[in-house]
Length: 245
Image (cartoon, rainbow, N blue to C red; front, top):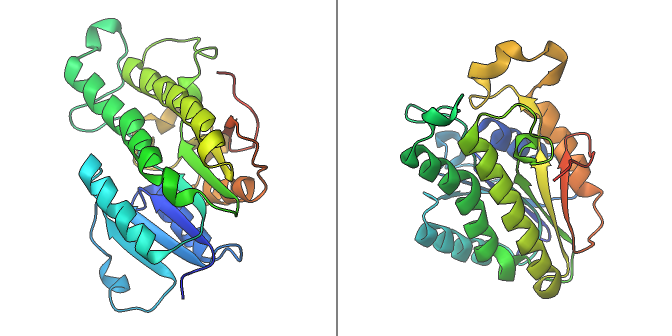
């Protein structure tokens, strides 16, 4: 028998993805959790019977299609999807302080991960999430992607990739409203969360404004549990407050 209600975490090995995975295992609205990441199945999960299934995916377009084929075999009712993929920095990429720091390679890498990969998932998922029951899809965006809220400049690649993501999500929400009327899309700003992504920049953050991954996961799950399917994209923060586009 297929699970009645499934939550899917894309990017489940990251700090927030891992916290969402643990939180959804405890959610009485969710019967089954599918965790998707680049990494193989954790050793402590390989031989354990549970309501969780792991799928390895390298986030290429073909790998995303194959992952969705596996999802289709595992469930016929998806109620929650969270797309957690994102990059701010790595050994090759760092937020630009001035326009001279902008490079083609950094722009391409940041846009691919922050904008293109989430859109490829929405493309692949549209027929899977369509159904009679409500489904909420939350994609990790960022307040820094707000064009109206840009007061300090800098961080060209990250800002632009999140702004592009928001436009892609807005456009997708219009089509989803026609083709998958049971789906609600959210562009979610988690705040500054204590993860590897934000670690180099935490010294300038007030302690009260630095959140644990568990704190953000709890807020996001509650927000998703209380959404109304309205055919619109909501750009909101961890407090469920609207963010200017």
